[in-house]
Image 1: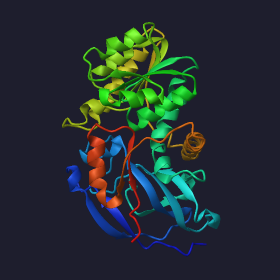
Image 2 (image 1 turned 135 degrees about the vertical axis):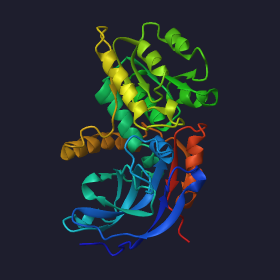
Image 3 (image 1 turned 90 degrees about the horizontal axis):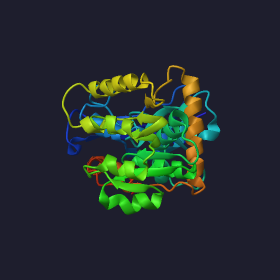
Image 4 (image 1 turned 90 degrees about the vertical axis):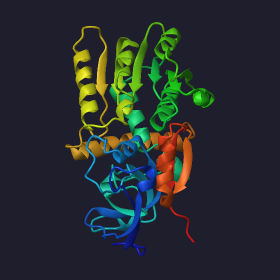
Length: 350
């Protein structure tokens, strides 16, 4: 049974090709009725992740061909349900990871991909911890399994994933050393981390001075030449978690090559007899077993949203932009000046 507010049209932001952030296009498209097992979700908030920044340059590992609607995750309200979906979902707020398609006023999703957002949580706040929160939670608790009392390094502690990771680690009783530009040191310190200037040419030496015996884990989204320095920071039994290749995002060439290079280095390091381990975190790992993947994602996101609702996590919103200004939102996210995540919200009603 569908709700009475079925959406027939949607405003979408389109990435037409390798363009500047000002080259995004806005279009109105017919939205199909939800099929079996599907819902229509009205977007309340979406956001700009590092993935969209790479997609704009054609550099995301497995992005679809241009043109397409970007938008890695979304928080919204169900306005219609398809056959086989409980009508009680209509009017309730959910979060979902979409990979693409989130930059739209409404979209059709599989009901099985929805995760409930706790009552009273602002949708923009919830948006900051969807893909970022799942990523941070899984890297910390599933990939690295850092013990209470351990010490970790978070590169880019002011970023969307980094700021969430710092808070989750501190809540788990883990000491955090976080790299950031000087302008964000006070904020990183307030999150609970020991800040280190990432522009300091002796940054890794500064980290060694803070943790002379090495650290239990390094979370590195930068990749490139610095990956070896991150590996050297580990103590015996420590884990390097690589989850991006930001160092090469502006370079031309094959989008898969930097990832494959990093993956190869991590494999070689894992063969060394020094007790350390290295892994490349892939958000979509295990999706071939879809039911298990969905269950794990829902479990982890539910934990993060609960912590947000309880006030353990503080949403780091770097800016809010209406959907029509998605280009400006993307430009701000790419400026490397922000703390937290840039959020895109629904257009205000006239």
